[in-house]
Image 1: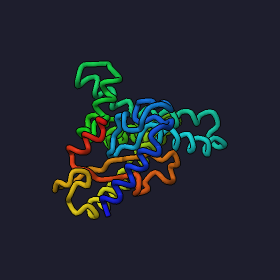
Image 2 (image 1 turned 180 degrees about the vertical axis):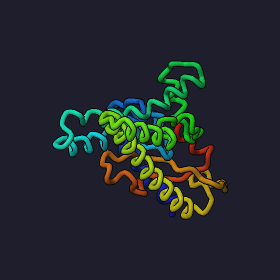
Image 3 (image 1 turned 90 degrees about the horizontal axis):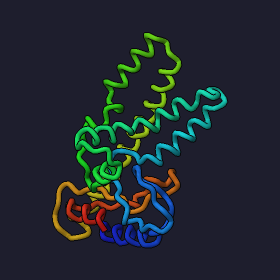
Amino acid sequence: MQQHAYKQANALRSKFGFFTFWKGWGTRTAHTPIHDNLHVDCEVMRVQEHLKLSTLAATVALPWMGKDVWIPLTASVLIDVDHYIWHAVKYRTLSLRAAIQYFGQADPPRRQAARLLHHPLVLGTLLLIALRTRSRFLWLVLAGLLFHVSLDVVHATQMQSLKQSLSEEANGFCPECGEECEPLQLHTVYFSPNLLDRYNQKYFVVLCPTCHERAHKK
């Protein structure tokens, strides 16, 4: 069954090999093959998906919040700057390209320091300051940050569920090379532009670490 799923996923990759979308911090043009772009198959929702959902939420909230709606919208999008700042400090480079390549690995290291603004301690501190100062601005910033983190939690839950179900179907064997491997890694073959179809199982496969890294380098 998993072999069939992988063939089906490859068919999708061939069918949707040329289309416009951007992933992580990068931008894809209509002439760039899907498999040429570095991407992250992990627990973190992509920036453009955050942007779409945050914009939708801001549009819904606009009648109540008026012009202040830009505050939570901006906070929800810019929270991910902590990834870039961590990489810049850690590797002593301001290169955005280098940061994209680092976080675009098949299975990038998950470091809490790279998600400082997402940390409960930071969010809790902002909450206490907002309560003490009764600052509307801080409350709106916090609302944007919490909305972003909530989306990440939902995304991580969905991805973990997909990984578990596909790994059970694979029975511990990589469908690409046939080698036994535990645990297998989740690989996204196609990113649906329809967020309601984002977690459709047919757009994912599980691979061993070697095949997963190779898939990202094709």
